[in-house]
Image 1 (tube, helix red, strand yellow):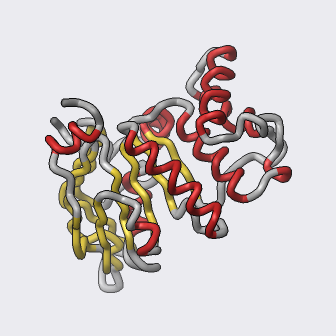
Image 2 (cartoon, rainbow, N blue to C red; image 1 turned 180 degrees about the vertical axis):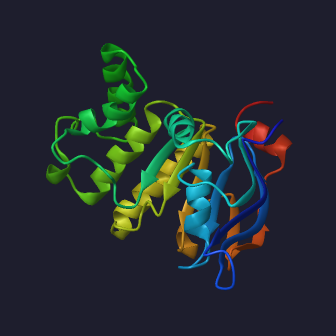
Image 3 (tube, rainbow, N blue to C red; image 1 turned 90 degrees about the horizontal axis):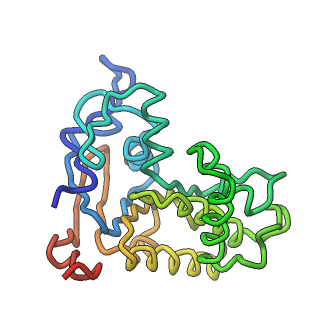
Length: 240
């Protein structure tokens, strides 16, 4: 099976020349369909730059990034925007919800950009909110919800269009311990259902929820533990 993600010799260099900074320095890895991966590193390690590359929010200085078999390394801004909209569900630390919209309207918004018909948008959004336990909060605005509930809305928004990749950037960073556990439980459930989940974090405890942990330091992969065996991963996802 072809990996969902293939990164080959990825470089990201800022200030090329004498004072250059190699935020990513010759990074190569594969991430398979249905993996749950944590990418962990401290501030300045390169993990945020790597997240931007995987999320098609930035392009590398050199190297290649294949997503679903397509080389997205040198696409235009419009093409990258299309990839983000179709292929990636984002969950951010800051929730990124629109304050004057209800939970349901926030979840519907990306589907509008995908030209999903109104009735289908409503159905998909309601189903996503029910999956994260917010069936009674659909008409509430972000200011009427707790931090944990707002993050659930963000997860529902990421799920609604059923993207092949869920990219969670410090999803528990602004939450208390109880809400953090609830959010991680949801991410683990998504993984067991066969979703590919990539978790960006600086927290070792949070990273332990993943099946595979990739540590980044000084723009390089320092370690890669728990790499999934394709056959066992298929079995875990019910593809025997």
